[in-house]
Image (spheres, rainbow, N blue to C red):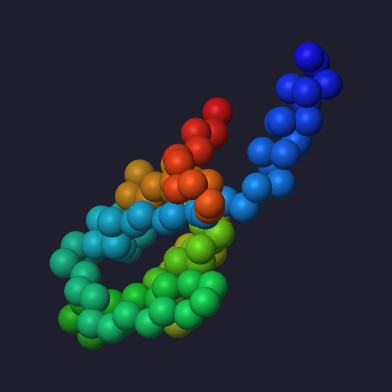
Length: 109
C-alpha cells in the first residue's frame, strides 16, 4: 500500500499545472509608489507574460506579470519591483494553481 501512495504522489508532481496571477494593479501601484489613481492606458499579451502600461500625471509605469508568478514594475525608468509575487510580497497579489487537464484547484500548504 505504501508503495502505491508514493507512486501516486510522484505522479501528481509530474502532471502539468497552471499558475494564475491576480493583481489589483491600482492598489499595488499605490503600495509601491505611495500615489493613488494610476490609470492603465495600454495592455500587451505575449506567450509568457502580460504587460500593463500605466500613467499618473507625467509619470509612466510598466508592469509585467509573468505566468510563473514573477513580476517587474518600472516607473520612469526606475525598477520598483523585480521578483516573485507571493502572498508575503504584496497584499494586492494572489497566485492560484490549477491542474491543467481537469481545471481542479491545487491547494499548497
